[in-house]
Image 1 (tube, rainbow, N blue to C red):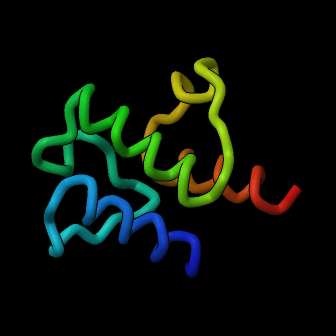
Image 2 (image 1 turned 90 degrees about the vertical axis):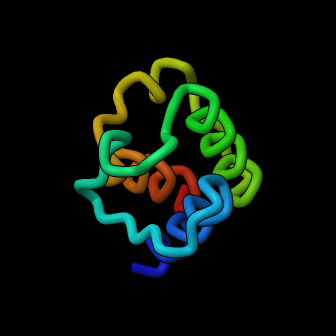
Length: 78
């Protein structure tokens, strides 16, 4: 849950919306303003915060925030 909270703070900052509360089921359709540019900003912010990198292939497999969280978790616990 701590990871989700940290990622939620990144979402709030990237989308400039303090009311965002992500869940593992959250998708781009659930968040106003989540377009291709904000997606890039979000991924860069996450990579910077956690000092990780996503491959292009990985990014294409994410269907929701849960997939993103699993990937982050696997990279920071290695």
